[in-house]
Length: 67
Image (tube, rainbow, N blue to C red):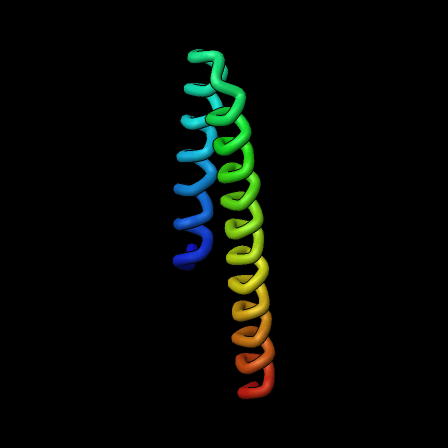
């Protein structure tokens, strides 16, 4: 895991907590804010995964070229 994946998961979790708190307290603003954070965290997590996979592919190509 890279830093974007970890921070994305943390942001996603933070958003889920805010969203749940907004639901429990009846605060649509907090619920919406949490949903937005959750979505942003998921995007960051997915971007981190994509970057990691590209890096792994480049490493694999390098290993093949060494052979």
